[in-house]
Amino acid sequence: MRSAILAILLVSIASVCLVAQTPADAPAPTRVSNTEQEKRLTKRINPKYPKEAFDAKLTGEITLETTIGADGKVTGVKLYGKGEDLLVKAAMDAVKQWEYKPYKVNGKAVPVVTYVKINFKVGEQ
Image (cartoon, rainbow, N blue to C red; front, side, top):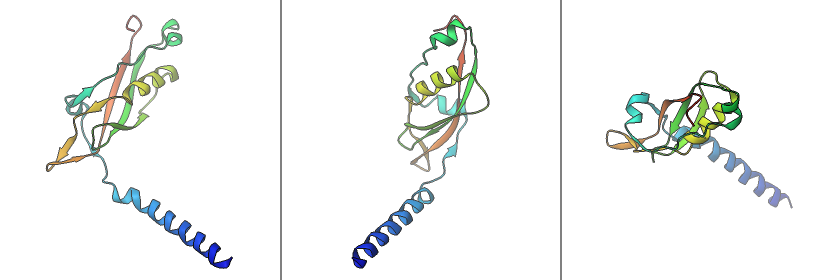
């Protein structure tokens, strides 16, 4: 019984150690300007103007800090600044589906962080 508990404990500790090492092994994303990264966009899904926001005539620019993996797929999106919740959700839902040509440093694809701006104006659906 003791050996079974000890084995489970050792497996648990090993798992925690492996998980703790993973982020340190991953390269930090390279910051890339939005104009540079926009040139690399290969798949863009336009956000849907939420009906409630449109009816309420909510407008605004939503700025998202976007992390893109070495494979060119969006891996993270978070709001940078402020925005109406309905517009933020619509912008995030769209940007999460975007894809880019991989960004390379010294010939190797690397993850990047950039800013994406989405404008919502009444009259544009």
